Amino acid sequence: MSVSRQLLTEMAEGLFGDLAGQDFTMAGPRVAEAGFAALLVPEDAGGFGGDWGDLFAVLRLAGLFALDAPLAEPIIAHHLLAQAGIAAPDGLVTIAAEGQRVPWGRHADAVVAVSGGVLSLYAADACAFDEGVSPAGEPRDAVRFTGGAVASAPCSADLLALGAFARVAQAAGALDAAFALTIGHVNDRVQFGKPLAKFQAVQQALAGFSEEAAAVNVAGQAAAAALDCGEAGFEIAAAKLRANLAIDAGVPVAHRLHGAIGFTMEYALNRFTRRLMGWHSEYGSDAFWAERLGAQVARMGGKGLWHEMTARSDRQIAPA
Image (tube, rainbow, N blue to C red; front, side, top):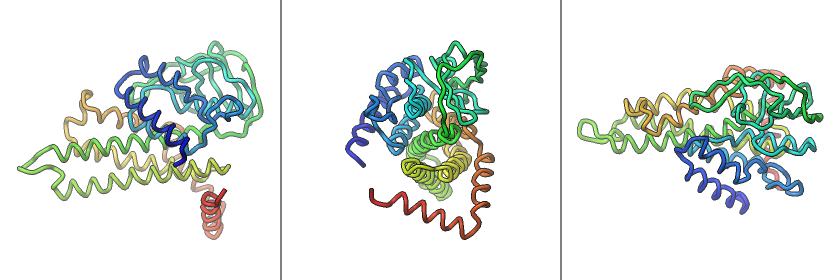
């Protein structure tokens, strides 16, 4: 880990840990003040100059602490605006991927959309929102643009894929947190004279859960490395699909092993599992990403797939 990433993650861990359990009205302003939105903006443009590996590390921590504040979307929005040479407006800037509800839309001061190879920046007064919420209670609003864009520029970015990468990173942290809570519970809870963790069936379930959580972390890190190398469509599709499968497998285990207490609002587990279930369908369901990944593999053919996978691996580990 680089020194800059270590400092970044230490700051994020301290802040997100302090904000754990606090709602948007408390967490949102403090996250905005910390300046995370400029994480992917180059230093010569006034940003942090971070890379996608840095973003994965920060978003994983956001998932680990169930951060109730806009983070991923403002970072992506500021990154795209910087690439397009458009000055980012003050306040909260979120993203509107085609076919998706807008995270934190009603609270945004501006919205970035990409359609037909064009990035458009809309002020809040040019947007009409149909308000909704995620399973975790966070704003997810359908947007209709009622006015013209403040600025626009050519853009080849896949906003859906970038959003999917963000959800993989957040899911990696949330799965780790849910697993840690489950481990703690089965070690503390005594049944038939011994801790639940001593029962073989419980141990087997935990082993499977740990594999699922580890797989999402590895897949997300691979996608971040590919993004830092340039093109990452293959890795993001695989990572989002793998994250969705892990959510399907891990969340039921966490709740089964917790029993009734896991379903109470007072207990922390729901803060992670409700977010995970919402993230499962955001920026593409498992069916969507399975179809996209399958189409890519089919075009490559058997030999082509092996060549592509090894070439991508070599590219990511090659010395700078």
